[in-house]
Image (cartoon, rainbow over all chains, first blue to last red):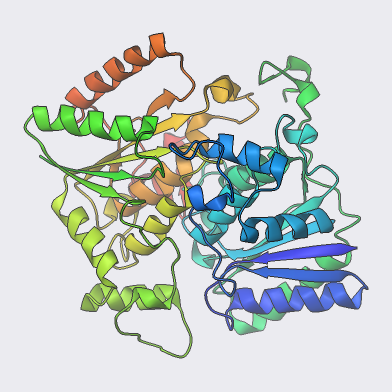
Length: 234
Length: 234
């Protein structure tokens, strides 16, 4: 299978860098083909603006969504965006490897979504299970300050972890048609003697990513006017 | 009072640009002093990396949090970060004016948080109601694709709006000690005849921002080991 690792960390010798290398090795050992978008090394442009299009529908006023729609039709995105979209076309599975910063992705990866997951390319007219990247799967592999990992839960200081990740998992990936596996979470301050256990866990997860069931988000058919119909409410 | 508007939109003639100008005018008419961080115009660097520090504690391997802590002690951030922190020191109230992109801020504003809200400056050792920016207030003023505004709620496709904004309001602003007002949400596709109503609503909100009560997030004293103690659970 074809696998794309989108990696966002400024330090190659970081834990995130190790996890990127570890997953590449494990996946290649299984016979998969792995490509990597190393956003920091690529000096990936994080900021969406008018330079993201080689031609403009309206050169005098920037309506970013309008220009995305036009560029999706005419393949007139800037070269760096087209390059990322070509990798997305190619891949069956995407792993996002990044540190949780402020409960979200680092800005460079947020910019990757803003610019690459364009209207008309990743979604639109269809969204969610009708999104244009349907057929692909993805998984977040994240590091997290360990001390606050017990601050999650219905009554946790940070609320439910699934709610903190919903903006990425449901509102970006699933919104674009991608099925999402449960995330792999590595406590970044885990002591050395426990670290190997996490690498072992990750190895086992990577061995099964094509069999593991996706998070069972509701399909659009379960909603009416954007609200879950009663029979599907727990 | 001193008010900082942090504004993130690539098009000056956009609805977001109008809202920035409108709020500045309304607030100055009330006698407040307003400064603006126009992140696109400033070409604000979105991407956190080793160049964010004028001296490095560890020049050979980047541990971003360690360097932030060191730079907070020695005022050795890069000039653009120091400039933003100086504005934060000065302000009593912060308005964040931006379009909701992918249920979050545009990447340029995420980068502003990653870089400016540094460990040792905005938080740490204290967090939440012990955060270092305690005494300041803030409010999100956002535009939002109107068609999906009815997709929120407990059983909405996008879940509760307060949960979508929790990563910003609770986990960045309140995390750093800032009290947060209810957001002002402007449906970006509202027809022209309704738009004036929203501007009128915004005007009234701006007239009362120093009296309006903040969102009643729980103080740390309501938690034990990161979990809300039973008497405060509804």
